[in-house]
Image (cartoon, rainbow, N blue to C red):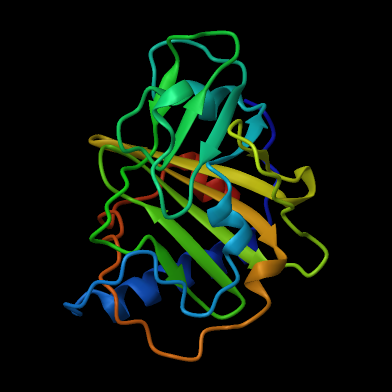
Length: 217
């Protein structure tokens, strides 16, 4: 298995931020699709999608019954991914491969009636938690990491310096990925109002896999 580079302390903070925010908003009835609560996500929303190549055989192979040495992770913010080249209806994130045209794995479903952005203090999460395979993208304050947007139908590459790591847990009924990034936009304009949005419900509480426990420890 490829080595996973991640800061365990920050990971725990990110998970706590997500669950606390989700619990605070779960009882609300008003829905404001893609409300950002003053967070700076303008560049993220302008690109049709963002992508990053991941050299992690286990992470890439987990959803399928074959070995995938590396894969490309892509995601869109406040919109579904384009149908081409992902061939995934209403997906917000996906794995693909340049070496296997049949390898296309959706990692969450876009819904306009649920806000995918979960704000926190100095961080926020984009939650794609619907379906058997779900993903949670965590963005933590780092003033030195900017995501430069260029207008292109082919998307924009995630800065390599932004990528912190990926963890994954497989359950009897699904797989959950948590992918972490540094982002200067998580530092500016921290939210000043309480969230009033129905967020995606977090995955059910289950025991973490051996992989996740080792990473957290």
